[in-house]
Amino acid sequence: MPTLSFQTAGESHGQSLIAIIQGLPAGLRVDFDFVNSQLRRRQGGYGRGGRMKIETDQAQYLSGVRLGKTIGAPVTLLIENKDWANWQDALSVDDRPLAQEKYKPLSPPRPGHADLAGCLKYNFREGRFILERASARETASRVAVGAMAQLLLANFEVELPPKPVPWERIRALREQQEIILSCVDPETEAQMKAEVDKALKTKDSLGGTFEVIAHNVPPGLGTHTQWDRRLDGLLAQAIVSIQAVKAVEIGSGITNASSFGSNVHDAISYDGKKSSFIRPTNRAGGIEGGITNGEDVVVRGYLKPISTLRQPLESVDLETKKSVKAAYERSDICVVPAAGVAGEAMVAWVLAGAFLDKFGGDSLKEMSRNFEGYMNQVKQF
Image (cartoon, rainbow, N blue to C red; front, side):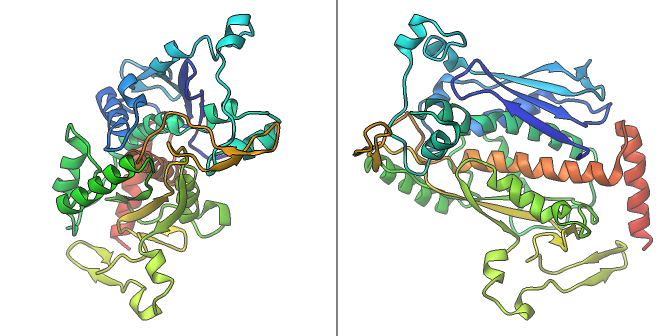
């Protein structure tokens, strides 16, 4: 069993979303405002649909946190679905005449969504119950969980080296009130916005790429000793698990695949003043052999366009098997900024898990002692 784990529950239009976190050390102070700010970031971005005008996501803590700190017990988070007020009859828990009357089936299945595969797996004749759990609304739970992981990791930092994109610029993007497309280059962002507008007019949707960079990561997280404990593998699985993500890149992995080795691998040197090994490049994305090497961990997720189209593609009626247009359900046009926030959350979660596996400890103080001892060992190497 991993030291740190979580599970989520809840449906897109159900009463609430829930997450249960196991393994957080005791003594971690919870910054409630920070967690809720991450949830707000997930709701933002140009191209989002009408659902985000209904919801105001905030995390409620049902267990595991007392007097502002974790107590070592499972932490239960709840995020209310305000849209439930519009669905409580149609998706009633108990079976009653009014519920049957107001129920809204989803058929025919939408190409690119989980509808058909889920109906075949669970023997449903229409996709409503598949949609409800497969929806990216579930990532709200993960963003709250990832924010807890970020709070844990914020207690442990090593020196931050200079970056091509100034950290101040990235921090400003995270804190700005109006989130457009979360691009660090204003000119490129304007072009991206125009593409979203074009998709809106043509009743289409757009995908894209997000990048997550984890600074201050110490060397030694993850391991090469077993396939299922390699950190790059864990990160890839975590990112692909985000709805609509179809590919993952660690460092400049895609470019590396068509390059000569002499143009790919990061040369190693030693900085005597800092007592640390350094690399002038970071094409490996901070991971070699499944282990962090002290450089930034760089992960990219590639999203397909949203599957629900206002101008639906061809599909098949599940009862008659005749060709028809796919169903339409209220949807976004572009979710790349929101997916980037979910990506941050999942990267933070995987790193926090690797951190706990490495340094252990039932309390934050014990974990801190283990971390400090290891970092002294690294400096004296």
